[in-house]
Image (tube, rainbow over all chains, first blue to last red; front, side, top):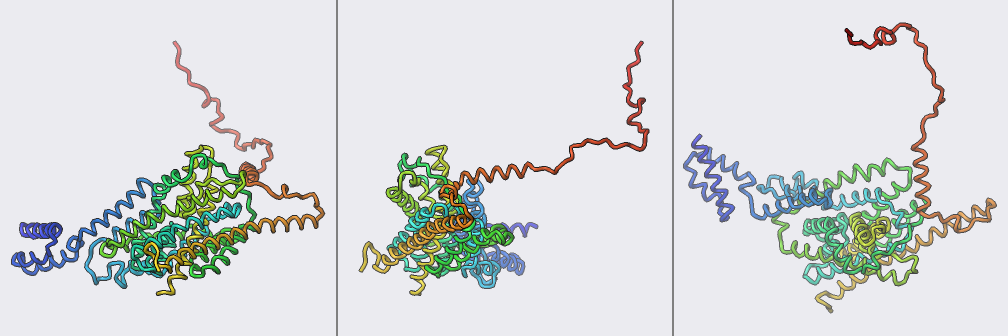
Length: 418
Length: 115
């Protein structure tokens, strides 16, 4: 008994020395070799397989990041459906292990690697888009189509970040993948980065989802800065009723038009509009129900977990990741400002009775439905009787279309060069 | 040639890319501004064929609020519908005449013994 306690005490000391000074545990193996021969060798083998023996301080940092994500999701309710799977994924991806035993997400043949296949090959994002299409009501957009332009205006964030990333020395493909963070659309960001810059996908996905979760923190100061109080209280006309025919025509025309313009975004736009047609046709309720509930939930779990697990410390904690996080924050701000300024510009040309509340421009950044909720909250702060949610959903869903089109255009420009 | 640390090709992609996104959505805006007009024209035409010449744009343009009011009224109406009852109350004859529950003995209140 005394002998066993001594052995474990020595192993604990080895572990502490390794953490504090970075000494290799094998250095002390020779010292303790005389203690018990084979037993010691077996224990050392067992020890070498444990996470403690392979631990690096970077793993601890990433596990802390994962815990922080879970904390944000539970305490502040920031996108919990995404942040909890991602947070758990980050922790799982950073449990230290010995390479070569098909454990890690980057090791071919491992379970996580199989699940990650859906991310690397861009399978999950279109399935998510199918679910989004099946749960999105485009009627606010159809009733006031000019609000669609706000969704286009906010995409300036994507292209401004593309410029910024190029100026910081990223290759055109990497810059394009980083730029899409400004689209505030996780699946689109993963889809584009898996095609253009797979090596940066973990950082891009984490940045995109983190900033999407932080929309209620990032957007309000910009909204208050750009939109004066007198414009924040503008009351918009209630949207007109939309006929079923228009609702059915929207996904069909939208699909044909956008995919003809940007065929590279076919998987995203095709699935988005297909999902919406399932919903609006009224005769495929079972399929629409599966797409917007069971299927999107399954894919969200797999996507969140594997994207989180892809952030292994050795590939994630790099200077490039830091730059990507900085550029991501910038792109969200530029996108929000772009939407707001364009809304103010539109008001110059609109008649008095048709004026729009410029706050809804901020919803053009996609991030459905969080940015629309932020608009509603800010609108209520300015005027407790002014409900903007319905109006904000129009630029919000057009932002989804706009960011997918932008992704397709970037793919068309940049895939040729590979 | 480069401008602000970025080469001309990157500038081209940026400006052209954003312009294409804007144009794509502008097309959609145009189409969906046009579609309600076409639908309205079609409805008017079919009504005119049925002899209803008095139809104006105001008759066809029902606001979302009006629709919401109609929808909530219908919802309330259908929620309050119950099964049709005859409203005739009947008492069914009991075959077994005697039951301890209608026995006078069991129904009497036990009074305290008074001295």
